[in-house]
Length: 95
Image (tube, rainbow, N blue to C red; front, side, top):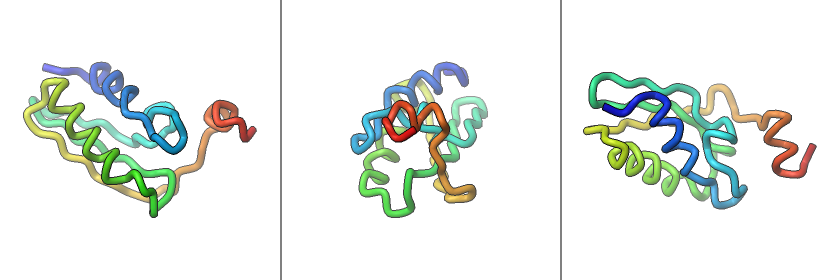
């Protein structure tokens, strides 16, 4: 059975193509909930109109299945609105 740590490693492989950083490092993942073989993730996008949103959702779902979960549910929220951390700002060159 995959663990939370396995899930985080999977999320580190899902890259936002626009920013070139993974969704874990960007801070787009708010919660990871594992119940037996079911994975539920609450996440956000860098903006409500993120053009890569559907692709990112597919990548998270597929990654969860490949990691060994029987089902993967992804909830999108914009509460709170995403704000890059100081570390992410430095990685993006906007600090």
